[in-house]
Every structure is written in C-alpha cells, then in structure tokens.
Image (cartoon, rainbow, N blue to C red; front, top):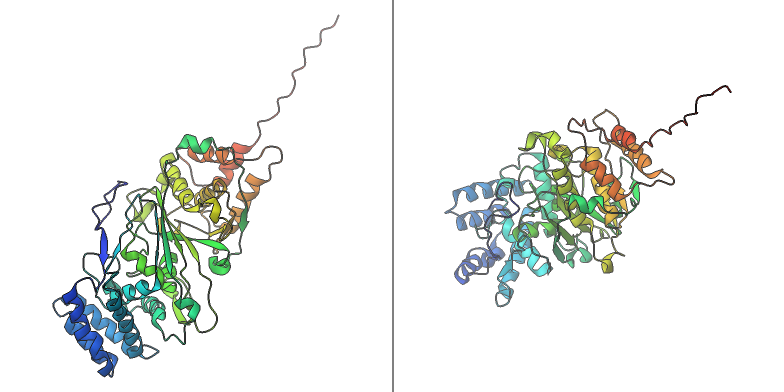
Length: 463
C-alpha cells in the first residue's frame, strides 16, 4: 500500500487487520502445531524448527525466521523463555475469539480516538514477531529486520522490542498494565497564509535545553514530538535507527499501531498516550546498544505527538531550497500546529511540548526554519516549548544552540514592538527567491526600525 504521489488522498486501504484467531481453521493449526507442543519443546532451536515447518510454503519468511533462530541462539537470556512468552501471549487470542478477531484500521482524514487494551497489544506484536499476521498488511512485518541482524544496531533494536516479553518478574507490573490510546487528529479547516498572517498572538515561551539533554527527561509532564514518517514507526522494522525508530523499539507497544494506523496526510497528526519505555539503551543510529529490560521501578507513561516533515534535498524530489517557498512553509506550519493543538480540557497534563530538530538531518530541513515553524505552531496552540538542540552544528559552522538563542533574543527582546505570530509568519512566507537559509541576518534586517529622518531646516534668509 502506497501513498499516491503529490496527493493528499491515500491509495486504497483495507478496513481492518485480522488477528490470527480470525479464521477458525488457521487458529486450530496454530494451536496444534505450536501452542500445544510448546510444553514438550526443550530448546529454542526445536521450537524454531516447528515454526519454520508451519511457514514452509513461504520461502522468504522461512529464510528470515532462520535468521531469527540464529539470533536467539546467541541471546543473552534464554531464547526459549522468550519464545514461550511469545506463544503464551498469542494463545490468549483463543479466549477472545468470541469478541475480538480483528482491529479496525484508523483511516486517513477521520477524527477518531481509540484505546487498545494490553490483552490485544501483546498478542498482536507477538504474532508479528513469529510471522503469523495475515499478509495483506506489510507494515508490521519483521522479515526485513531479521535479515539485518548481522548489524549490531539492528540486533539492538530487536532486543529492545523483545524486552516487552521478558519474564514478568523482570518487568514492572505497572508496565504490564499499560494500554495504548491512539488519536487521529485532522486540521479542519486547513489554515491559509492569510489566516497565519492575521494572528495577533504573541510568541509563546521557548525554553532552550542543553545540548546533552534528552527529550525524555520530562516525559511525565511533557508531550514528546515524534519526528515521524507518514507511516508511523518509519523504518523501525527495516534499516532505520533514528529518533522515531528508537522510540518505537524502546516503547514496543507503539509497534502495534503500525498494523492499524493508516499513513498521515498533510492535514493530520497522530497522538499516542500510554506507552512506557520497557528497556534502557545508549547510542544513536549505528552506535545504538541495548542495555537491558526494565528491572526496577517504572518509566512514566508518555504522550507522543507524531508529525511527519517533508523531505528535501538528496532524499526527495524537492530540492533543498524548495522548503523556503511559501506553500511548503505553510504545509509545515499546519502540520506542526495540528499536532501541537490540544483540547482545552486536556491541557493540564503534558502541556509542555518537548521537541528538537524535526525534519532536519536525513530529511534535509533547515535547522533555523524548522525551529521557527515549531515555535509559531506552539505559540498559536498556547503551549510552552522546550527545545533540544542535541549538539547539532548549523550551516555557518556554529553550534545550533547558539544560533537558536540569537534568534530567540532577536524576536523576544523588543520592548514596545513585540513580534507576533502573524508578523513572523508573514516574514517566513516572503523569503527572497535567492534566500541562503540564514534567518538571523534576514530577520535582523527585516525587523530593524527604519532610520529616523533628520528634520530639514529651511534655508537661512538674510533680511
């Protein structure tokens, strides 16, 4: 299933995802071949042999499961214990056959909020790990990840995911009780350039965080921005090992959403509530390392704001400079705002937003532009913003944290003549055609008060 090129309408999508218990005959085969014999299985290799036999007609799946089996042989804990936890989880679907055999897919452009209980989340993810989900939905599919397990960072992701199924005495009971609430939010009506320019709203609070700080530090009180792919989860089950992929691997309940959340359009954001971090890790990208499943205490339930930025430059059909065009500035403003906006009755919890260099890095976004866009969106939503710069170097060779402080001071310290959301939006919509991406010099020039004209004295006339 793909998104139609340059369209806000998705390609045809199924209405639901079937669980393995949907078809009576399929479920009986699973019970006979896998669930019941588990009691007599003495090793991970023995069980994997049965699993591969079950999937024998799909050679691609067989090959990937062989790689998974090799991974389990070197697993730091007992691989058989993990497999038993997976099968025990899947077996619970048999008790739900009378009530729950499928999950409705959250379709594009629909305002909807749903909560999936843990009794469905765990079996859904376990089924995907063992290749038992129907083949009509490919986004929650572990085959590609299994073929990459020779790469240490990819193996680390799988260990993070499997922490969901570590023995319950290693994972806190609070973690085991967490459900997953998913909200699909649509911006209607879509705001125009004129709408943004007309906003007579002051720029809101922008708190600059240290370069070494983590966005998850304030997870109990902050909503965390997920630098998302339009298909939530991005490349977590493929090569991806960046912010969104690490969030989904360390909070593995999020993986379930990949089976029932359709891709986002330009008008949408996805809000997740309830997932908890199930493990600890260090590193990022190629340096990612798994440290261990949660053993003591519990991490707080988090709220995530998933918004997908447009790609520019080498990863896109759009050149790097296209992001400075007014239509694309507007798109990113509206995308950030639909994620940051929040019903008034929910503002007390997770009111502050924790974000960073959204859409930059691999997606080619300009650091200064993306920070200004998010500040504008948070200001309109009347929510304070905590910005994490992660030690990024800006295009002029300086630390981006230094340049962002300069931008903040430039726009905030204007006694008697404050910059409003409308004023800054207008400036962003009217960038020069040959703009070089330096917003500090551009805004300094644009906001400089016109010189005071000297009074012209009449010529002296001798009388």
